[in-house]
Amino acid sequence: RRVHGIIKTQMESIALAIHGGAGVITQAKFTPEMDKIYKNELELALKAGYEILIKGGSAMNAVEASVRYLEDCPLFNAGKGAVFSAEGENELDASIMEGHTLRAGAIAAVTTIKNPITTARAVMEKSEHVMLIGQGAEEFSKKMGLEQVDPSYYYTEERYQEFLEAKKEDEKKGKKFGTVGAVALDKFGHIAAATSTGGMTNKKFGRVGGVPIIGAGTYANSLCGISCTGHGEFFIRAAVAHDIAAIMEYKKVSLDEAAKEVIHKKMIELGGEGGIIAVDNTGNISLVLNTEGMYRGFVKGDGKYYTSIFKDKQHNSI
Amino acid sequence: VSTQSTWGFIKIGMKPVAKIAIVIHGGAGNVARNSMSKEIAGKYEKMLTETLEIGYKLLSQGGSSLSAVEQVVRHMEESTLFDAGKGSVINEKGEVEMDSAIMEGNTLKAGSIACVKTIKHPISLAKKVMENTPHVMLFGDGAEKFGIKEGLETVSKEYFFSEPRIWEMIDVKPESTKEKKLGTVGAIALDSCGMISAGVSTGGTSNKMQGRIGDSPIIGSGIYANSKTCGAVCTGTGEYFIRGVVAHTVSALYEYKGESIQEAVNLALKGKVESIGGQGGIIALDKTGKVGMVYNTPGMFRGYMES
Image (cartoon, rainbow over all chains, first blue to last red; front, side, top):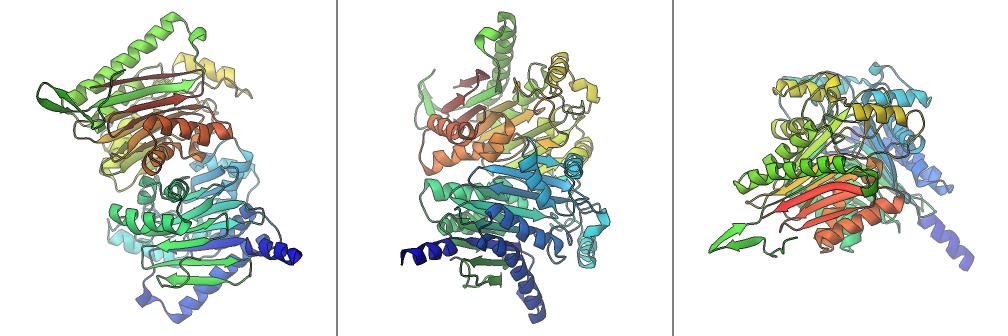
């Protein structure tokens, strides 16, 4: 019984959650076909990370794999499929954090890197710094031998149309803020969190949002890991990812309680829209949003994939 | 050291006067009593006192903590004694790239800029971002163009170079990262309306990579202000302060664990910075005007003035 108990514990103690962005999605406009397509992509992204975890791989490898999948998928605002800035360009940000060492890496405003999350990880592991921006980040990425692309690589017709619409409506605050992210707990009990984005549609030249800001869009320590999506400015001002971790640790409440206090209470008071995915060191997962929808999913040791798009009562916290 | 009333008010005669306070730092680092000449120490003391007086005067006349913080940081940016504005360190490409941020504790509004090269007062640019854009953070050319559009003063890139820094860089290259002189500037103020504001400005670390961003322009890491709790600003090897989300940690310890402001900075430095091998310091000011200061380097230029 003891042998079975050990195996059972190892299997159950892994957990992975992902998101593909909060906000954008209006239930009225979402056809059953779209529902199927998006959920399928979310499952494949989960699979990429899950297969690593179940074989005893690290949380860092798992979150990077899931986020890379979402970056490569044109449906989400990260990597390919990134939204356009006010200048009609794609500028991408990403960050990653390793909970048990508190190591972190972040890049912002890059235009020729195929998988920003991988470069963010390289900053963490292969440089003396935590955050690099613009040209400096791009040069570093090239030096590391990471895959570069032509700036046109990220283009999708849909995002370009959104950009033209936003330009027409002028100062309409980009409600089109998507992001992708992943958080994981591996069999060693280690946690990692990763987030990647193309930013906000029609964003001002040089604007840096919440995604590459450690403590705002991404945070992980030995107790929990969080990745956020939403209106970045609010996440920065409220240090959302870190606040959730701090409330959990200092007020000694559950991860879900901490996440709800921040997203359902504090963020709403501040006027910020968005959501988070989070995992704690015992495998609890929390998916909390204050918007109409957030592409999300999770999987645990039993290998069963759960995916969700709208704010429904199921699958919000396990 | 003055005794401080817990309700934040001090009676003078029959009239209650709101507590005001200003705390500043000019960087933590390799500055020890025996390694600094009396002459230079005197220069720093004079500069810190002068800076405090500027901020305090503004506050005592009923000015906002936001204005006080901006004016005080501008004053330190103009001095070559600190690694901010004029006197900023040089990066690996031989250039100056400056970062700055400001935060207003009533609304939690914030402004941050990174990697600017020709804006004379980065703190004022950060304030413009906060007040005149829907964003929190701008960097590089975008930030500079915005600053010019807002009518901020620009200077040649060479304006910021100051001889000591150039020697420092030559000393630092190629591989030596020892003896990093850590000299960011920061300020926190509490005004007569109970508003807490914070500001920071820096040239970063010697010989840093191009595009490297430290903790100073990262809201939550190098700077945080919340009038319901406290303001905190940090200085040191920025990477550790980002990983520790240190400034926000101070506020979180104060708010969620009920720690005193001094305990909060102590715990934050020890638990979030020292524990992972980092060096530096934190100054903080709580909503009642109490000051907290801590550093684990040989020294930290600092000062405070309160009612």
